Length: 109
Length: 465
Image (cartoon, helix red, strand yellow):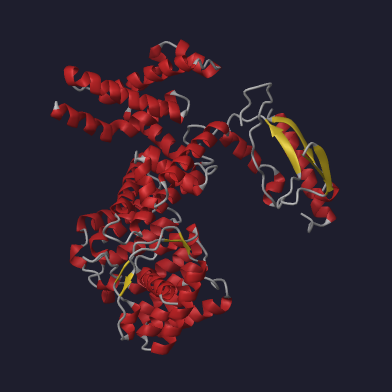
């Protein structure tokens, strides 16, 4: 994505805005936001009871999270169909993850 | 008693996958529950059928009993989520619609089962394992033995796949028209991989691997029956035509026999005719798909009275078509070998050297192996040996052994030709990336020859560095 010109980058962002509008109109869209580049990332780990704060993204991150969409999909197949419409899927990849509910106990691992 | 036992076993073989497929639909795609219900239903059959006799419609009986057993099980577990409750509350007749359902509905269940096992959200290894376990009904032990992985590894692979189906919400359905072509391509790829795994088994002792080919053929036939798309027909034809040569591919010592030395009188003519008929059907797709074209190439090989009388010009034409459908330097290499077979080695050598200069196949050991074979035909002994060493280096440095190398017996002969084709007993398999594997069988013995040579050379290199 770094190689895109300003115009191309803007065009892609306009496509994303339109994509979100489409997903909202179809009732699938719950939440979502783009993220700034990983240059701005700060990583927090807690080890031995104390915080370890480092600049930058996780060292092991090869592909970086550029943003997220929270969509309502009937099942994995619908999620795949919706994910194909997300414009940056043409450049990087879209990972689909089911949302896990946080509970007091009996949480799914 | 013995005969009823045999009857029950026959019903199990014939119906268990159909019953499982329908139970899975009735139980919302819950594999564990459906499998347990299937087993319980057969336990009941063993209890009751000896006295009552086998019911008129054993499949209906088994689905019905299995469904009740599953509901019992859910009650016992105290599971009361909404979908379970709905199933328990709903009067039985709503869930016994399948009794009135036609064979096509049962067919749909079987398709659903195949499509869920081959879902692209599962890893390719998981797709293969799950398909063999659930759609074919092989035991975990048999699949593990066929792929020479520990039973625990394979069992875990299957458990993980089922967990992912459950957790990621992969639905139990046949894809709609928009997704069907790409999903079907995935299913065909899995069947092809299974077939290839069996086809590549070289040793007479590797009966389990041979069973894989048989299972792939059975799946291919089933899919063809349920969903006659041209590429389904093409894949079935391709498998039938390759399998028809099975008896001649390995000699009495378990060694590979190259295509031009195979005893064509033992080829299965009925199967060849069936394959050829299907090729014609498969080629009617516009444009014909890659499997159909590969099947057509295989058909030409099986129809030739001997290697020399093979219609090489037609085969070259089909490779050109395949290249248009699937541009790939590997297919160009195959085409070059076919050209050499028709027009003599030098034409092929020129093309292969051109490909070599392009560099796209830089680490592909079949390129020097193919070149070596052509040099051998041209009588260029030194150049052939050099190319074989090149192939040997490439194959041994990147080959990843998935099974312990055992009893590799290589008889060395002094003459160049025999050096290239020493009889050997192979009981190992070299795992290669899926894509390359795809082409090994696509070339109907042509590159297989050269690949064998490279494998031999590779083994010799490993054994005597």
